[in-house]
Amino acid sequence: MKDFEVTGLKLDEMDKKIVLLLQEGISVTERPYLELANQLGVAEDEIVERLKAMKSVGFIRKNAVATNHYKLGYTANAMSVWDVDPEKLEQAGLLFKELGFVSHCYERPKFAPEWDYNLFAMVHGKSKEEVNEKIETMKKTIQGLFRKTDLIYSTKILKKTGIRLKE
Image 1: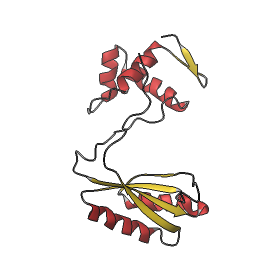
Image 2: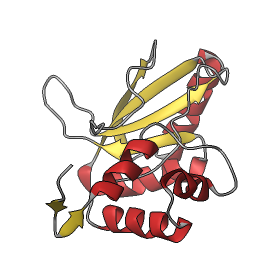
Image 3: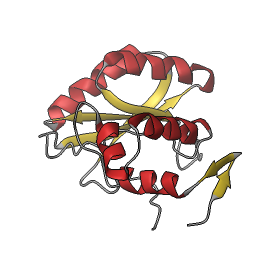
């Protein structure tokens, strides 16, 4: 691979090796970057610093666990969608975060009249009844901030990875 530059950061062959290994997943250990460093024959600090540099320019957005909720027994998984006043979106999102059971929450544009929802919040449960109870709690929590809501239940995991580099 030739070196290339992304937003002022020059990436080299070692950066590519790091990304290729990371996108395959890392071990659940006390020091996963040390294990990665050992595989590549470099110091753990070098891995950490390179990852920080890549993240600082947006080349890497996040490094997170991708949970398979179905394997954990959470078979009722629903995206709740909300029609929230734009000036109240941040407040509603922060209130959802405080509940502790919303796995992710984000703003999306409306496409009226077909789609009037601008706040999305994922909820997981072991039954539809559990999810419905959580949705009722969410409704009470942001009462007066939304006009309407709906639920979209998932039936399978469609994607659990980001963009992949090729060798």
